[in-house]
Image (tube, rainbow, N blue to C red):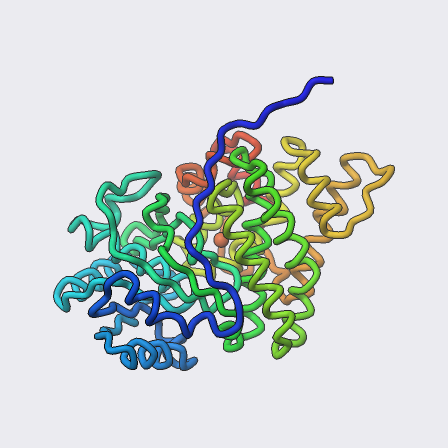
Length: 387
Ligand SMILES: [Fe+2]
């Protein structure tokens, strides 16, 4: 019997504190990095939810200085990163704490990069372009899905070119991630659905990625199981702290999987879409996911069959094509159950936009690990299907 041996794989992760109350350790961790003055990065929604004042208070009580930077858009912009870096330098900060969803965390990563290099954030686009050590990053996520708190990705929006660009480097994995399910209690059902589907897509894409392997598969499958079993229930019962913790755990595991196995065509196409229309990231993924499953299926049949089984789909005695249809329908039904069942056309995408969207998607680093090698025409066809 022939036995294959594994390819070389690496696994990068931050120090993680997971559980109710983890956020309260923020000052201890900032001090561990020798902090005197913290730049606290967040956004207006998280300020209104009350998390920023709580974290600020925890830092001040321990004798640390704290400067707020909360002018971060839902899709963080290059100029916001540059402004945050200016404040970090002007104020003599020495540690960055981010509290919020993917936007403040990605912006905080960008601020760290610019603070350490003094150049425009766009010049760090791509894989492993960061040379200098960046300031310590302590992250407290308040959504369950983005996983910027465990990932080596930062996604920044360039408003001038209407594109989102990806920075991929282990330098942007935070030093510490305080993952506290209590913080997600302020998410609306819509945000719970968007971020939960984003996390599910992270896990699916990581499991079928050409960069997948033994170190990431277990996290990807566990994430798929957790999100499949609990997301729709959580949207119905947002006050259930058990469900909240299961989804936070699923999101974290999906993050550990995709940060190391990387992603695929859903994210490449979704970044392009989000940059062009400034739509929520999870919503973009939700519109595309089953169309990309259809497109990729034959290139990773065995792996998709395992995903189907993990989602509780009976596959015994079925042909590959039948499993594909069941998986596709199951994912589409889950999206509908959480209130995200639309097509691209509903969000204003026109046939005439597809060449531009496709040209950007094909340049995104996430396309490199998609299980099916893709050219411009392939991507155009998937967008057309999703219209
Ligand atoms: Fe994502």
